[in-house]
Figure (cartoon, rainbow, N blue to C red):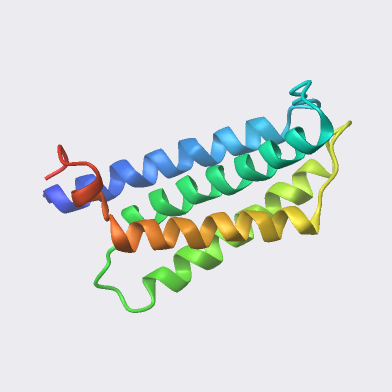
Length: 130
């Protein structure tokens, strides 16, 4: 029988997979123009990179068993590897460019996601999840 804790972990794993698909879909879009001046567009894009990887990291961490040794190290490595794969994928999309700098920006989002998870784990952030 599957426990309530395992059901929550599976839910967060499913949400992480769906969020990862959203990242893949957005990376596959040739032009995500905002029509803003360059400096605003640049800042918005970098904040978006951080945000999507912060959410991905939080969801992955929430799907893990926090009693397992080094689980956050796995979460960090998994999210950064996905950032690398995402940039590699972008390098094959017409009109897009893969960038090592974006991996660094994504990594900032990963660390913010881990920090948020440690400060506000799912049972505190989402009161309706018991």
